[in-house]
Image (cartoon, rainbow, N blue to C red; front, side, top):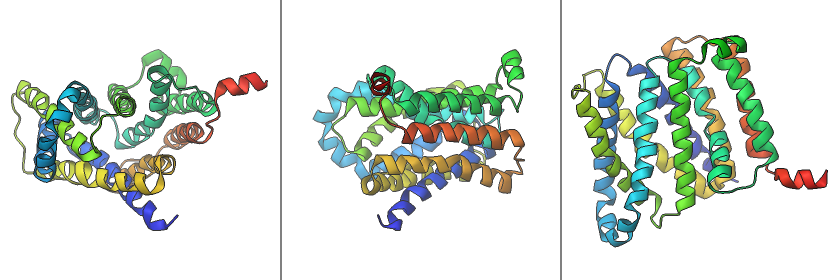
Length: 298
């Protein structure tokens, strides 16, 4: 496999890591409601300019799936993004990056529950390992404190955001909507934009500040359009298994950028907890033998 095919999805993951930093930079600069609404409004307008006509010509195909596309828009553009922007106000970019690495694991769990897929050895044991690492990370190396006081609000919101996006991926796979990726994304975005507009108005329509404008532009163009294009190219050339493994670079990139540009400190519990969490995620991705088959052999 040519190395250049790996370059596209790696750059996509790097853009998404930078976008995590952008979420943190937005704190105190632009309201989460304004960030969410204007990001997807910008992306929606650009996508409409590129794909609006072919989607309109397929409106008879789109119409029966509008309800499902609306649900996908709520999960991927409304819940995930809004929760992530709110979470950034009370947790670190480092934690956000590590928590985002849990999405493949959460997707596997939801696939077992919603799609009836067989549980795998990696899914069960990797899931347990990841949960142990996550507990160590969120408790700052003191799991007993986590039991006594619970996780920080921002960490909990980010985990909920990741669960929402994992659900997005699972439902997208289950429903098999007969549209190509870009056409589907366009409709999802325009299902989400009116809801985000209501959310924006409910927060008294906070303005986009001068400092917030470049953040909106980055989130709306590189993170929402360029990165998905690069990722889709990687999926087509490498296949889902190889490309998905590259998502494990997300917390690595995020931690490095957070240290360099946000001045965040990498603690021992970040390294240990994050490392154990990633080990569990790798187990999920690599150990795919069905658990029942293992039980029968025993």
